[in-house]
Amino acid sequence: MLIGVPKEIKTHEYRVGLTPDAVREYVAAGHRVVVEKNAGAGIGASDDLYRRAGALIAGDASEIFATAEMVVKVKEPQRSEWVQLRTDQILFTYLHLAPDPEQAKGLMKSGCTAIAYETVTDAHGGLPLLAPMSEVAGRLAIEAAGAALKRHAGGRGLLIGGVPGVQPARIVVIGGGVVGTHAARMAAGLGAEVTILDCSLPRLRELDDLFQGRVRTRFSTIATVEEEVFAADVVIGAVLVPGASAPKLVSRAMLSSMRKGAVIVDVAIDQGGCFETSRPTTHADPTYEVDGVIHYCVANMPGAVPLTSSHALNNATLPFGLALANKGFAAVLENPHLRAGLNVHRGWLTHKTVAESLDLPFSPIDRAKA
Ligand SMILES: NC(=O)c1ccc[n+]([C@@H]2O[C@H](COP(=O)([O-])OP(=O)(O)OC[C@H]3O[C@@H](n4cnc5c(N)ncnc54)[C@H](O)[C@@H]3O)[C@@H](O)[C@H]2O)c1
Image 1 (cartoon, rainbow, N blue to C red):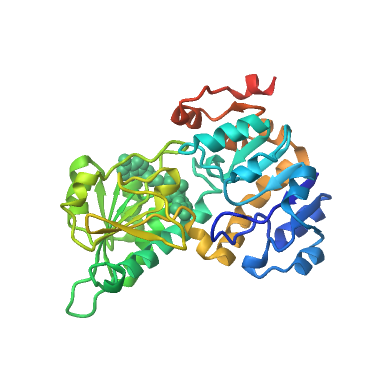
Image 2 (cartoon, rainbow, N blue to C red):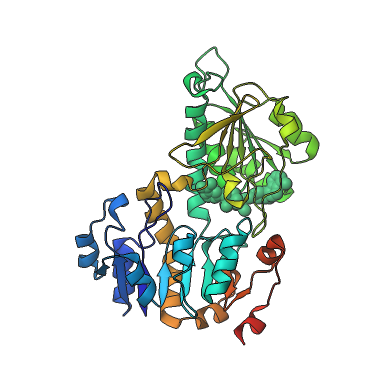
């Protein structure tokens, strides 16, 4: 199969769909890979390095969209990209369609087969292609919070870990999945006072075991969210209902009862955000203030550390990408975990939760296949 890797075009997105190491694996498996000129510049991977890994270098993205049988990216396609996609071309990337009807309709119109990293599953009920970026985003969330808490940035002027004799920051993490766990681990490591809220009791038990009393756990209800948010210096939004828009757990009205200069880091912004006042921001201008509360809502946080992120992502996507390259669409039909990743196929929305979130018709794979 001919695999194409365009350069990412979203603002401050420096990750790349395939690293040179991953290209070597595709080439070793008998595939051809074409990479856009400078696609790896953000991670220090030169065109020469890609050539040595066996890739061909294309002068621009249009060459890749015109020829590749499978396009491997990182971020959801932008309008200029989705209009170039074709029927039966496989798109393998993050999509986050639930809050993005325009992109969903664009992909449906193209006729392409779009597999979303974020809904591919594993045998343990996890999301293996979301997990590595969630690990990165969770850890970065605490760095972002630390920066925003500084007085010159509008924050309370608080050092996360405090110093001996002075209390540390109170950090509340809503959603104790991968993002939440890694955020809590970093925050606890810095010496913060950390509470994780989750609506899954089994998950709270696991977290309790994992942190051995170093982090408090609380069952998430309207009352506990309110109580914890009002007392927090930092609130990390890390909830996920797979394929759906994030539930709004913190309303605008609640902000007036929060501490002035407190910081919200809404990591779930890529699914619409779990704070009513969240709107997506970029690394170029990551924060804004509402009612005295600093909001950090960067939708592609791992893009800030593209070297770590590209390698972490490729480690996870490689086996699925190789299966698609080896078997084409048959890999989706054969493998229930790849099938869970199928969001759009030949003009149909094939992921039930995504279709429901968008209020558009859902088509099970059998009908879509026809
Ligand atoms: N902004 C970014 O750059 C970035 C990067 C990576 C991930 N994310 C996003 O972060 C979010 C979390 O991802 P994850 O990998 O940790 O997901 P996950 O599935 O591992 O964890 C989500 C957790 O949220 C909990 N949850 C669901 N509803 C809840 C509620 N009402 N109250 C409390 N907890 C609730 C679930 O029980 C689960 O434990 C997702 O939206 C993901 O797309 C964003």
